Amino acid sequence: MAAREELSKTVQCATCFVVAQNDGGLDLLTCAHTLQHVYRARVPLSVAQIHQMFQPAVICDHQENTYRSGLREDREYAPATVLHVDCKKDLLLLHVRQDLISDKTKQPCQFPHRPLVPSTHLPDPLETVVIVSWPPYMNRATAKGQISHQSRSYEDVSETNEYGYDMNLIEVDISVANGCSGAPLLDCDTNYIGLLHAAGLGCYSCFVSLSEIRAKLGKQKASTSFHVLGVLTPP
Image 1 (tube, one colour):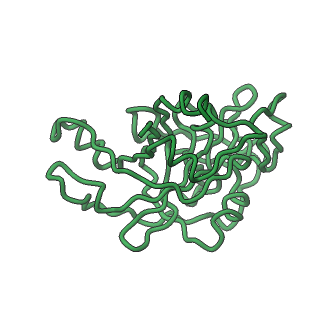
Image 2 (cartoon, rainbow, N blue to C red; image 1 turned 180 degrees about the vertical axis):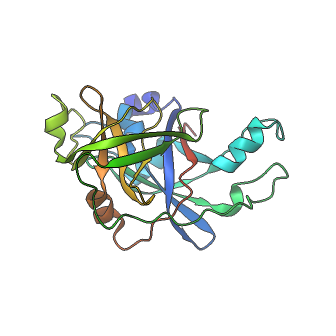
């Protein structure tokens, strides 16, 4: 545990998006591998361990733009809690109180965080898809590409697997930047079909499939504020 605590003394950034809005709060989905520097296949992380070693915090896209426009002196992050983690599926579910996402006057963000709908079907190979992501300090980064393969195993895209990943991946011909992990992959109707895991082989990127996300979220409704940056920092 001592080694883990030393390794936790770093800031990790990822994109995350809202998957439920309830009781004055937002549930945010992102990738678990922002924490992979403190876990391995045989030593996964629990929710309690994450809370012991990290303080998750988020900022919404609207507040980032307020900062960039010079209307506030610094970025203000809202503390979040971890609801669920699955290291093998690379999924991390967070919760943040909506009233803590504040504007320049310290009031809750007044912009809507409307539902993002999960797709009812996976696009066919060569169909166009879009990623909306937030590399560090570069919000609203978008790119489009094409489905290359609808169902890859982790062994198909990587020669090693020290973290014990075991999920179905969508392979997409699309370029991504560092810090985009956790971003939603959208179909032509702007419904989400996956979550960015990482760049794959060659020009391809790999996304955790919607089927894996559905299995973890169950019957929870997905929702939209996908312009949210998840930042995990030591307490």
